[in-house]
Amino acid sequence: MEFIRIFVLPLLSVLLNFGSVRCVKDLSEYDKYEDMVTLDGGRYWRGVDDKKSKDGSHPAVQTSVKKFKINKFPITNHSFRKFVKDQRYITTAEEYAWSFVFESDVPENIKSEITDKLPNAEWWLPVPKAYWKHPEGDGSNINSRLNWPAVHISHIDATAYCKWKGLRLTTEDEWEFAVRGSLSKKKYPWGDKYEKNRMNIWQGKFPGENKASDGYTTVAPVDAYPAQNNYGIYDMIGNTWEWTSTLHKDDKKQDSKNKQFTLRGGSFIDSKDGSFNHKARNAVRMGNEADAGSNNLGFRCAADVKDKNPGKNEL
Image (cartoon, rainbow, N blue to C red):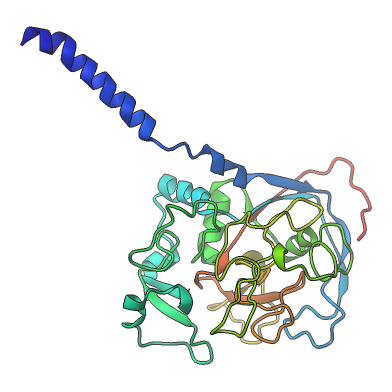
């Protein structure tokens, strides 16, 4: 027995500990999605000359932004999870105990119990216990989606995360400067020609049919497609809307209690031509209240950069 206590038990402890270390998954590969790109800023044309535009993006106007840096990717589940663990943060969706989920993502057993629906938007279902960690409610998880955008994120949540990182949300002007990738007055980040394998939007008859010609029916990984522009920035158009810090001034019902903030980029339910939902393009925009949440709402962060040699860049 003495031999077992002195030699065998310590050896067994070492082997068990070694095995537990080997079982810990190395998640450092996902840290690359927190990379940022520095943009020199300058003057550029914001908006469109399309008089039919109904989202406030008409007319095109010249504006300018100072030098700044911005996330190359939307904030991922991996990154948001680190924030939640460190801060013991409770998201808005968790506090409300529900969030909107696109109907095709909702399991039948949950869908059958939901009776409330949005007028004129029946495809958005209020799913109990849906939030970033359980995007479709009970039974769903993010274990295999660490490089997917964190969703069900409110403006409140996005602001808190960026502050934790020593960053901030982008302004709307910065966001549009970044998406245009040095190209002036172009429809998409890469130019004027539509390319189906460059962004995640809806193809087919909405809401019942999605041909998924781009490879995805709903949310996709942040790097599912190549960088969308010359700046090497990914996933700005389509997939998930992104919060900005800019108030949505086009909302005539704006008041101090229900302030709306501007979202940019569109999402997986938007269309090429705007025949349903929003028209996916550089200028697409909408507003929503700070506590809003759904499985197509995400964000990315930005930061000021001191410009020692301010230039006169113009797009």
